[in-house]
Image 1 (cartoon, rainbow, N blue to C red):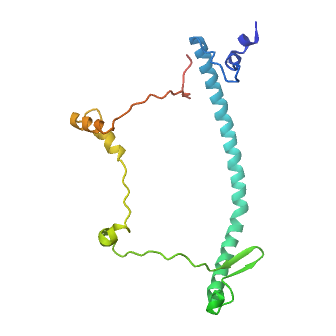
Image 2 (cartoon, one colour; image 1 turned 30 degrees about the vertical axis):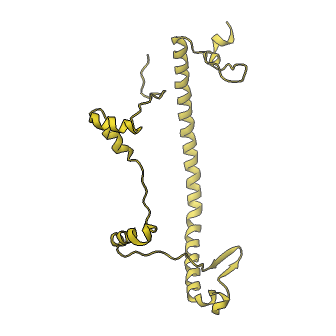
Image 3 (cartoon, rainbow, N blue to C red; image 1 turned 120 degrees about the horizontal axis):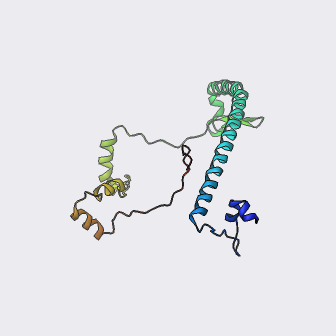
Length: 192
């Protein structure tokens, strides 16, 4: 008996001249063996994933225990530094404005104030948008046009109006059904 018959999965691992896998599934028996192997591989992967997840969970818990106290202390220190900086904000003004500096650095940590970009505040959005649409040819209003694929899918469904289907098709809009191969392992499978 050769090794290919002793190990059914070995028949599936052969490569062609270019190093690509050859498909040696030629009979329904080959299909059955391949599917049994897929089921075993999937079970092995599920077990290993469960073990890895448990290990990751233990490591994550260790980190959380380690970090909890340090994060709380850091948050307290950041709040205290913010209060101090707020009380000394004049000193953080640029030299031109009579201050010493915009930031303070020590031990690789920097604190200070940055000028943030101005924020646009709109009190009544609907009113402002209506006016902006007409002001300066509407350059301050953005409109995004896109096909509503869900509405099109519903319009072209099985009970669709023929006129709608024809008009959309004339403009290159159709439904396209594609089959996609699937292979799934059923965990609740019985013995066949």
